[in-house]
Image (cartoon, rainbow, N blue to C red; front, side, top):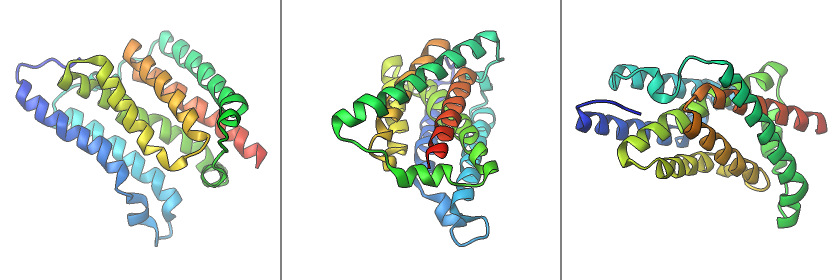
Amino acid sequence: MLKSGNRRRLSSLAVAGLLLAFGLPELGLPKLLFEDTAIGTRNGREIVWVGFAILMLIWVTQAEKLPLSSVGLIKPTWATLKWGALATVLLMATVMLSFAVIAPMLGLRQNMAATAAIVQVPLWLFILTPVVAGVTEEILYRGYAVERLQFLCGRPWLAGVIAGAAFLLTHWSWGGAQMIIVGFATIILTGLYMWRRDLWSCILAHTAADLIGFTLARLQM
């Protein structure tokens, strides 16, 4: 939780920070900046998302003058590893449930084009992608969003709902069966963060689940 006597100043900075966290990913910067370059849009996406995360951490420490612990980046412990591992198992269980039961029941199919764009890449980029996603998305949509929304509205559940909705929207283009998986991930990761307030456990679970899921998809293509 945030602690400051200057609530008006922090509220203004929190609103601006949330606009950055929620708005920057929707600007299409990878395409705008890298489409016609040697780097390309796919590689540029990882560069841009790393930039988003760095910008938000600079915003926290330099603009808001708050410690990184204010967004859940506390010292990792064995509990971090334990809960991250358990959340990974739970996330993978929901992946299996989604593809084996829920998606067929609803008549939804996997968006193979979106999957191929992620997994049919050079090995270094394939490994880098889940790491970047796990770190950057957890900083933006869990650590920063949940904490600042709770500071502004005073209701933890509402902060979680809004942050979760923003996370879902940024994956909306995937469509199909993948959105069921993202929905489960939103509930699990947001719930884990709001319970433990340890962003590293969420980063670990997000990264590991993405890497396992992408590897399974790559092997099938």
